[in-house]
Length: 286
DNA sequence: AACGGAACCTGAAAGC
DNA sequence: TGCTTTCAGGTTCCGT
Image (cartoon, rainbow, N blue to C red; front, top):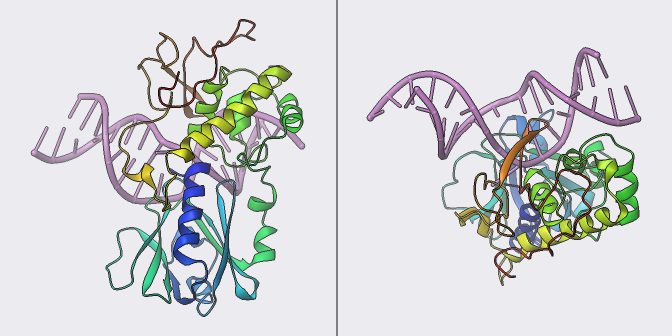
């Protein structure tokens, strides 16, 4: 389930597992994940030491000595997992990095929507996918910039926020969660948002992302969302269920072919004038 | 240039 | 129970 918070957790895990480690062997299967590249390209990482893991939006950039790099996107179902090298790999492994401490890193991705791109770090940063990313949604949002971008599109605010050039890292879930927290209907025309509404939206985006990350906090970077069965989201996946903030029922609409969840009472469709309930902080608080 | 829709994949869940 | 259909959190490409 990789959107910004999940990718951030992946970045923390990769740092904990591998920064400072030397790659003993690297291999990849010939799949769509490495589209356009020979599997042996990944093998060139052998002998190099991982120096840093950087996240921008939903992308990860692993950099090694010698300015070598590996760009990673988890797509819809990709994940990095860590195991003892002696242990048998799990299913759907598309690439493996064997480390110098008898452990191995597997890139697993059943659907193969994810991507691994090998190259020099500079070249990877120059790829359109990385270069065109907007500012990271977790970095503190520039409200002026966001307002300017929303004002110049005819799309709905939901679809506009899905555009990684506007803000990097939001996906279908967190856009729905942020719009709910901000009391904004997803179908609102992006350009119809007032200054105050954009400010509220910017705050709500930060709240939604930080709340998701707070559930992952701990001494070790553990991907709790992988085990957590229950749905901690305020609206996502809760069609027909009660809204936590009012007596309304959560509904599902489809925008651009994808589901969006919302509470029609907390998120009125019209340009809202009435006073909005205070932002809720995840769980039950308030 | 901006937009909507289709394409790309597999697996799990829901429906019959 | 077993077969079929639907749906899934992303990006990219293509036609308008």
